Length: 118
Image (cartoon, rainbow, N blue to C red; front, side):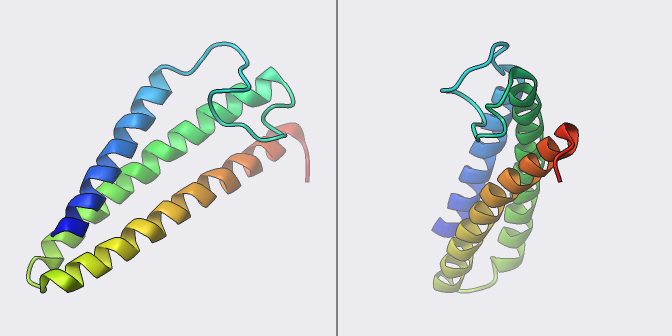
């Protein structure tokens, strides 16, 4: 059950962190905190749009991850501990990688769209 709790704790932490970030986004352009890529740092409007969009996307993905963790924990409760841990670790790594790359991809796509870049 260790892997299950790892998924549950991490997804809950990511959801909480994204909610806190959403309500405490800096009001001024900052090259230290927040979503930072060359396109988002181009101007303040891009920076604000990127931070708002990526934070909202992180909240959604964290919530989905939390729900999947709870459901999979209920399904896997009947399986031996080693299998649960193996599946949970793959879920943890897979969803973490998917979320990180997905947030970046969709936020950059959003920025390109609002800036008229193909």
